[in-house]
Length: 211
Length: 211
Image (cartoon, rainbow over all chains, first blue to last red):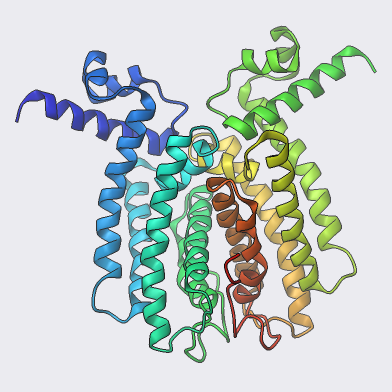
């Protein structure tokens, strides 16, 4: 491996860490290069602009997360258990981030959506594609659960959107309170949003008790 | 009224518009003063720092929104109808913002939470207070609905948190897709999250059909 490809990886990795901690607007190319330990000339060899870098950071982060989601949501467990494991994995990821940098940094895609989606169309489009792909994956599992008579939801697409919206909303609270236990409610809320058919679950106690 | 108090109002109003459009980090004091039409000296007469201004913007915005929430959630309608009217008012606000500036700008408090809550403790604390107050108001209505046997939720506090989380999550999608119709799902999702007791509502079709 030549030094050139190392430099690109180092820029991407530094940029992702900085964007997760401080957002997009707060960063300058010089600061990213300094954190990556590469000269500014290297940056413009690989990226046309900071926006171009942000798109690459998003793509790389999504490549990793999509792999995890596919592994969890595509396995042989009963469909609702797969969703439950997705929420557990989300909580574990946020907890690991908190342990490494002292604060829950939230969902990179949610953060960039609220910070940037109304400002640059390139970022908006890429983020839309990612959330559509997330909804696709969740919808497939919801449809499988409905086939088995485990959920009663009428419109699987809307149901999947609502589950992903609840996930983003609870991650927002986990970040606000720097507390990943906020994500504990996801499973029970998901059952309620899907109209889970199991007696004694969603209908009797739709929302998890406080912990 | 002297010019001094006009200047403070102009700074606050320009700052709020700019923060809603472009976030906090992207802005400088000079740009805010230019938009407000006041000299930079005036800024530091009223505010110690940009963070100090952001706190004032948050407080002013919350004073207005809290009044609206109190009016809607505190009136004499049946409790669930009050929640429905809160969602309708949220959608109308976002639509008005979109019409005036061309793009859905989302919830100022949600935006600042994801952009800034892990970076400055002063902003984090203020935003926590506001979200707690929102949850308080929603919880009161949920408790009233439970008194009437209209919802079956076990823990009214957690239920209220989940309703506010769903609201923030769907506002995120409205911003991402620049489409306030994303908020149409709020009412049906709220009924599902609360385990609404009315037959044929939450249990049979927990998520609104796509529109």
